[in-house]
Image 1 (spheres, helix red, strand yellow):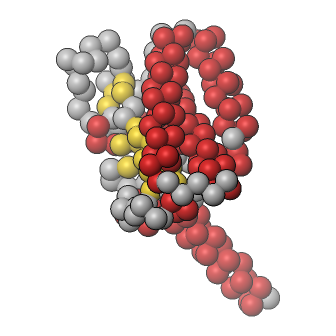
Image 2: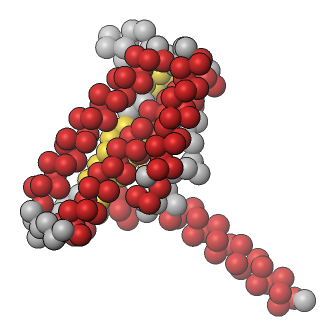
Length: 194
């Protein structure tokens, strides 16, 4: 009985350590997208930009970054994309749960486009494309499409204030994430640091 109990404790510790280290990055400044880690108002640590965003109650600062950061021209097979949330430049003046859901969808949209980039990268790799700049062009193009999609989302939902439209977008984004599930990626801290 003692051996079995020790095995359960050790297995539980290993699983928790593995989960916390491998499923997403969450430190003082960034969070990598994860279905298991939703944004919280405590993550919005920035100071409100009242000049550029006079009407908004919150801003989500995100990026779709290419990894590894110091990629060499001949390392096209290692290139990847990751959606990141920046805590120090994201801000809020409210703690509305509805607005928090709206901001989470912005981050989810960034993940959709990171997955689209990964899908294109995968197809290029399968076709033997070795020109690193063609990968970068794909990322830029889809990054621009992401910006347009984010603006459409804000426009149609009036920054999350039209409840039925917001709900429609939540379902739409969840469906798109599921359709691209093959291209999900669980980031590790080493991915960000290198």
